[in-house]
Length: 254
Image (cartoon, rainbow, N blue to C red; front, side, top):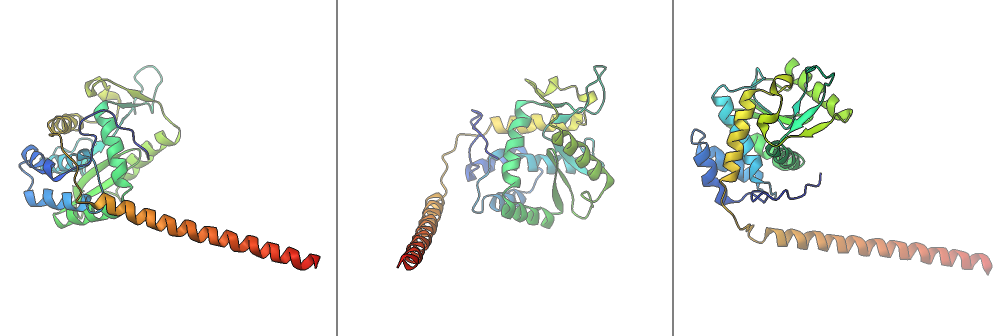
């Protein structure tokens, strides 16, 4: 996926300077867990602050029993899927406000960083939690040991929402999350309240200067050096092939 900056000040890499904000927003979550998740997410990887906040919000909701439509844990749909006909014959329409759109892009970026996904999952499991993604698109925080991914609930949610994505169901952008016809969709008020907390936390983040201790420069150097070696090897291979063709042609004419 290739995301384009949406103009929000929190569309940037997460930094250590954000940690105090996370701890202030979620005082019920142990600081050690927040630090461990941060370390796992940022180990040779960058993510937006929204990724950390959505996971912490999921833990917060799970601990408080604010499951929403799930029987297993706290789920977040990144768009609301219409599952009931409101009288106009529409079904499988999707609704998304700016908060959900930002979360959608940020979480997809993180989901593609497989190594860091595994590192974060290891941290969550060590603390008794589990992170699961479903199509299209959303995630859930559940208790480790609960077989959410093998449940009928997960299979139904994943199938229904993946079908909507596969047929290219219409996506309606709404100005605020309150404009979503919640009673017609698979979203719950717990999710709406959670998104409000996520949005409030994101907006309260201070401006940060990204400093990765020269890691970006080292990554540039490594990839450029490797690219140079590969290009040189390709050129030599092509040159050898052309030389072989020339010698073969010459032998046929002599």
